[in-house]
Length: 380
Image 1 (cartoon, rainbow, N blue to C red):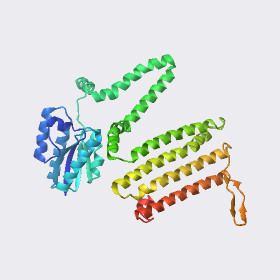
Image 2: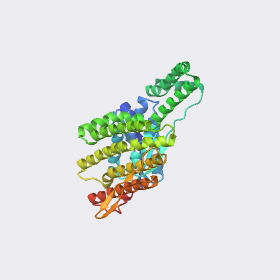
Image 3: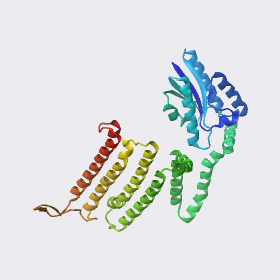
Image 4: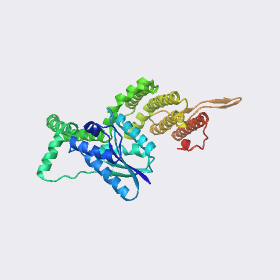
């Protein structure tokens, strides 16, 4: 059995300190890299990560297992560029050594984000996270605090929000009350934690690069996304305008359903515009398109129809909107006069229409892509 032991560095600090090119492969090369990094910065936790990779390799070889140690790093200006660099290096190692599995050695939560990228290329048997032990006395605490204050990124992430909260508290208390101040500051801090915890900051950081690449590559979806945003704003405005025309005594649920009823056609059009742009991009890029992309616009329309039907049911039951009338039908000498639909009948019509649109989409997607209706991709 052949195992590849890799130590990873997403930020690329080791490359800048040691001045090496990655991937660094082999016991001797990684041992030399430990010395270079240790001499450049003895406090860097990457030294411990590299030593742990060497130790794991030694233990695997002692168990009569073929093991190769390597070091991968991302050296790019953006997070996406760093991840792609590590992915390319991993592809090269897999092509060269053809290992059966890999053991990933990391020293931070940031490096742990590379594990799914590696796992998409080869089976990961173990993730070894290195935690450096420190003495818990007063001197070490002072030293760690000093190191923390010297880190610009940590200062901006932790100290700045705390400082702003402390400044805002007396101001809001003076203008309103203590309860309002606590609620406002708590909500702001909660929003900031979600912003950082969900990685929204990374998304906005990469957004200009992605938009620039999209403009240069001539993607149709750029225009359709702008149209989708505009339609979504129109939908929100239409929903608010429709709610304002309803009777104020209908209650929260009916008012919410009114907002959905008036806004969902525009929101469905927005989603349709965005999905259509993705569909065109896929056709232009690959000159063919999968059934999932073909079925997406129909799914969006079907979902919008069903949601509008359910919201109309609540509104009609509350007498907030007029009933829907079935049209007059005349076939030869036979004629049927129009009649109003009950809320249940109206809901059934919209649900059946949504299902029919979805089935038409599945049928068209299977016909265009040449797949059968029993294709697992379509059933998912």
